[in-house]
Length: 155
Image 1 (tube, rainbow, N blue to C red):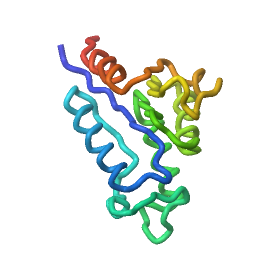
Image 2 (cartoon, rainbow, N blue to C red):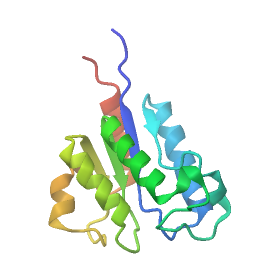
Image 3 (cartoon, rainbow, N blue to C red):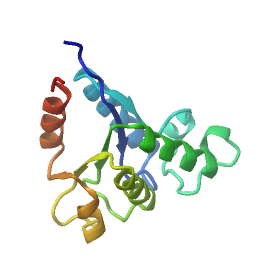
């Protein structure tokens, strides 16, 4: 039986975080998810220049073609629509992420399998957020344990 590969898009709050924090996170998640059999989509494509910024902007970088507001929104929402699974990690968010909430709404509307990671007292705790998630984990470890088992299913 052929192994199926699911496409997974990984979202998380980005605005205000340092470039290093974001790139370190996505590097770790990318390796972990590809290692268990996923095709991984991440929002940092062609944005290597932000790696050294102390704080990532919420409005894009109009002098960088792959990082303009238009490019960010269009590409990220395309990836949400293209994926099979939307993994949204909201752990330790300090403020509400408009971009992540928009991606969550699109994923829900597109009937993607939405795996949400957030603690019970997270700043994003809201009826819309919990209803749009198919499954909510309080830790990244539990979410990855689930995704590992999910990836190994056979049809």
